[in-house]
Length: 338
View 1 (cartoon, rainbow, N blue to C red):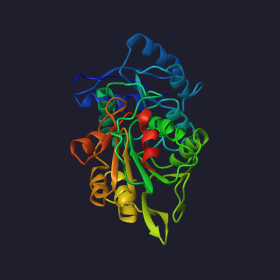
View 2 (view 1 turned 180 degrees about the vertical axis):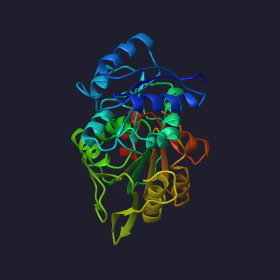
View 3 (view 1 turned 60 degrees about the horizontal axis):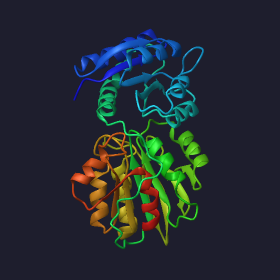
């Protein structure tokens, strides 16, 4: 893999220094420039054509969203938001809607050594998105299912990470309000952003899309998004299903796709349908095994449309019988199975 070329855009001189140092220290990333505002950032993008941009959102004058608007429709550079977790979460959700690939929350908005804490996450995400093919998300692509009869899904569970907001937006917009099964979603995203993201997804989808609440009853036509920092679990309640929010555990991700998939498999058995979309890492693999063991079925986003073919790759390579589908055909296949 060639070393990705990265541009850092941040109004804080301290943040520019720390982020550049963290990436250069990895020995695997070239930081080609830093920029202190949107104008300087856009000039650097035009002159240097970086592979990845790290972008602060809250800057004096024009905010970081202007960079994303200027890059709209381009496959590169890939933009990773690195901004304070205390900002208006609507801005973070809008950044994801405008095409940011991922979002890393700064531990503090102050010039503090705490910023060094994001180093491992930052380096891993830059390398992951730079290594991807940069395929654009097609609006229509045929599903690759074999056409064989499948068991009706009583519960659709979706797990995703890097690149997930865009994939979810396309998928949920293509599902009908008459969908006969509820949907539960886990997306790896910092705490505080899921409510705003759910509102944006709700506006774009015929379904009711909301942030999950403890004890919430699941019903057809409803899609719930796991709250950042809490696991989303599904439990059987008489003839129905309810959401339970679990505390943080030792798992690398909270919420965890494994936790959602495993609890859903316990709740509905063969009626469980697990869907693994774009994302880095292997979260969802153990849960996918639990779904198969319970008699349920799996769909994975194909490599051709993944921003990062990591989570789906782990499931595909485990040979669990998952059907690989381009994101443009995923809704059609879910409808067929529900």
